[in-house]
Picture 1 (tube, rainbow, N blue to C red):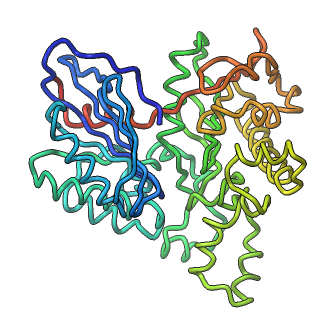
Picture 2: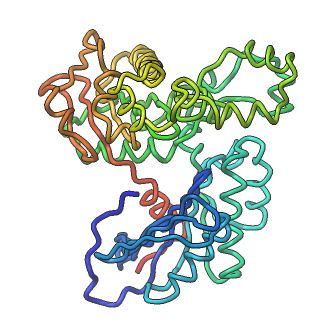
Picture 3: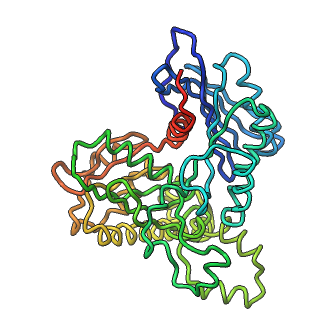
Length: 409
């Protein structure tokens, strides 16, 4: 987890904003002090993974970082464990912001959490079964802990893609299905793509009035977004986070006819959901792992499955990169974020291979040296400019929470 540098505050801090970012198998948190002007400064952060009797936890506060294991078997339990630890020695919590993956058509902007909002998020669980229920576990854990004493805000991953034009939103399906099941393209990783765009504004000297940006969020889950003037006009994920790129354990783009064949062969909807989400992608192609670091090491040892998985991953990403170049009429910037995007120079190189026709030219030395840092990777004077960007979803959630509740220190 990335944390802003933390320095000791010489004066008492009147309030803090707590942010929870719940993933399908993890819970991250960050605590921000709010100053008199509403500016935010990280004072603590950490996370919990590998839920169970020996769950892993990490905790950073000021310049100290500790980690360990303890019995935390759910997001709910981890939430209350974090809240108990924060009760001693931290600024009083004025509000809590939550990342919620799916807002559907109902939630397209930060929203104060009420009983009705909780019910609305719950009603969308079928659209994000691996994420929305867990976000609700965290929200309910906070509500039980604080009762009504601390206001909370939900910030939705799908909201960034609410600007998709109708032609990019729709599937060519019978309209009675669309109406009955809400089947349309929603897009995901909105906070990550928005984070990259906001960081680009600080890093780039380009003052183009209508910047065309292609943002690649490459981690356990992966997506690409085509962005014009700060607004999403297309993205690789659709009705669910399964569509699009090859991911660690998700299949990405797939012929629906293959699913018809599987269902006809007796595969249940439950098995489809489980295996498409957890047993496909890089893991299935390699037969070894869904972790890109592991696959790169195996490829270097001559592992054929790992080589195939990496080649398929990069090919799919390059196809979307080229498609979005066409959609945008070229690009002013290409952004790489996420664990793979920020830390795997060889993957960035392979994705960009053969893209010289578009003007994209990586500086080989700059790319090779960029691991976990923000920097320009393209040859000086060429366009599109290519950047690695540190994705920071938590600061956006905190800012949205402060803005909605109009808080200041």
